[in-house]
Image 1 (cartoon, rainbow, N blue to C red):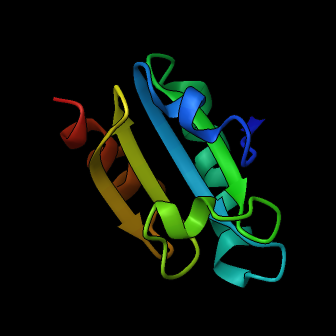
Image 2 (image 1 turned 180 degrees about the vertical axis):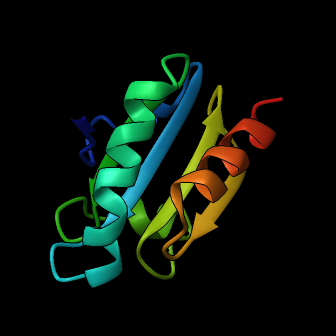
Length: 102
């Protein structure tokens, strides 16, 4: 899983289908979502799964309008196409991702 930084964030989301999970080490729901997100990254090869720790990425969370964690923002060529806030099941998250990139 690629970790995004303040320096590479814009470049990494600019091309293709990119999922960014915003999380924090102190966040319980983030810890519960981590293995689900990891599993989906292995199942959905046409999407680049990344993550950004909100405590380590400077202005990135505010630039992405992240108000709570976990938040997953789905981008297509740099444009946000969907957003998932809070913990969701694997099936629900997979459906949301598939719907976003139809």
